Amino acid sequence: QLQLQESGPGLVKPSETLSLRCTVSGDPISSSSSYWGWIRQPPGKGLEWIGNIYHSGSTFYNPSLKSRINISVDTSKNQFSLKLYSVTAADTAMYFCARLGDVVISFDYWGQGTLVTVSS
Amino acid sequence: QSALTQPRSVSGSPGQSVTISCTGTSSDFGGYNYVSWYQHHPGKAPKFMIYDVSKRPSGVPDRFSGSKSGNTASLTISGLQAEDEADYYCCSYAGGNTFVFGGGTKLTVL
Image (cartoon, rainbow over all chains, first blue to last red; front, side, top):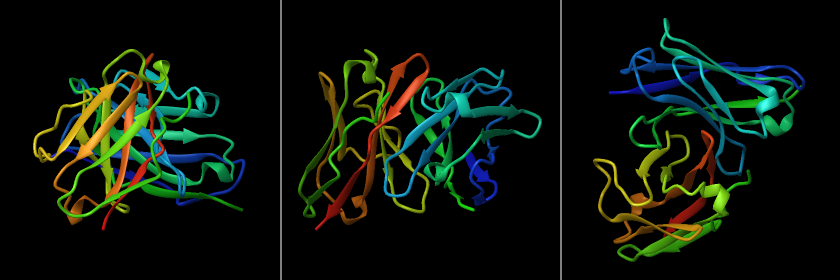
């Protein structure tokens, strides 16, 4: 059974870097033909797609966040990571990692999410 | 790339049907039929309910159905049950390896 689990600090100071990791079990990222993605949900708001990565390292980002994000993959640990730079209070959100199916163009497996608060 | 537009809330009584709309522009949908729907109970992982506009993943009851006309996609839930009460989100592939989500709809089962 495929599982994804987000991890990282729950509190980040304004102007600093938010760093999260997603650990995947049940599907080797290195041999999977799926993409792996990050999605967030600010309090009281809807979901926002952040970006996706392939095991080769190819990345695709939300144009509105592109200048501040970096998504990377570590196939040896079966993990992928998100870095969001120069955060503000507007980046406070529940952050989810998910698998983008290779045949089904949808996010078919999700982590439970991790809440990140930006505050001094 | 702005969010797809969904009603903030819908409600229905057990056994009834409800439809949740998801409206965007032609560029939001990218000319593709890659619209998906997700059920989210707060505190849990979102659940994948519909893909490719109208297809159901294995295990999703056939009470859930999807459709699309022009720039509006819809999710219909028939035979409402108490456990259907949740937030629902639409998502579309917008081309160029990008995706856009809707603002979410809170379904209340009365």
